[in-house]
Length: 302
Length: 174
Image (cartoon, rainbow over all chains, first blue to last red; front, side):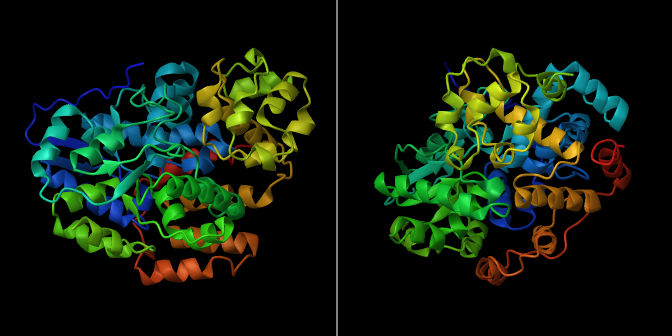
């Protein structure tokens, strides 16, 4: 199978995209928001935040009511559809909800009909929903990124961690990347001069949905991810999801206890690493917000 | 109505295609904590073992990673079937086998209903009230506070009527 992101039209200068930050990027994942906006600005991509967007419902909505989940995402998609631009989403959970709902609205006529008649949301499907990673991972963008790199990310071995929601299920997610061994994040970090390592746990679940509901289970999953990362020689992990980041960045004391060895792994949003490679000051400024210090890693990079 | 038809009326997937290859259970990250493995749940649905499925902890321990749905050779959306089971269990007022997980989802959705968006510190506070578990993760919370990650106020959705309607037509529908 040829996993390929459809290229965005590069005719408009600057490229303009609708932007759905989601609740986390306005809160605990502020670093993801700032780094995404800064990197886009630097690459000439204009992000226009969606008007009056609502929460995508995340795992909670589809766990308790299918129509509620579809309606919550469909409302956002209908707003994006009126804008007529592709919709860029950094949060993996929001991306998954929006992309999956768009797929369902195109493939399940009964659902689309219920959403229109019972919720007053007329959305037949069709918005081009993009994870922000897939905006950067096309050939033209990668060439632009290479040109903007002033400080190649040399000196550390990076592991790209995708988690669940960007790659699964592949059909609803547009068959953009291999669900068992995705590569898009690697191509972006490689363009920034980074060395990336192959490892087995890049799409294993971190238990994000259980971070509060069943933390002991989440910590077991987190520990397994760290165990494999360390055994693979990974020195820093790049993520593309606020829940993965919160879990991997914040639960290292517990993972250390489970593994019986100290885990001290810097966890970056991949957009932060792009910002560092491009020498963007506002991105460097927010790196201090991480719970596990990334300072030693940054020193190795310079 | 047979149990399988109930499930398929919510999630139009074809449980009947399951030939018990067990790929779903082999890839499930939580399977060792479940009463029944995912492939067993598929079989139990076909055998109309409604109560056993709806009262099992399996349907609540599914973390929605969708590894099973991705790997199923018959394209059964197993994670979607688990969603449908949870929905049926809640609609008929069953006590969830994993109450804390249910309470988290429920608290999350109440916060969405209240403002259209999630404010994370408020979500955690309300979840602590719902579970009466006030002292877990204090250290993590303090660290996040000191790093300036906890924003106490966040904007709400202006079109409140649209949000209200979503809940009136689903969770609050009589």
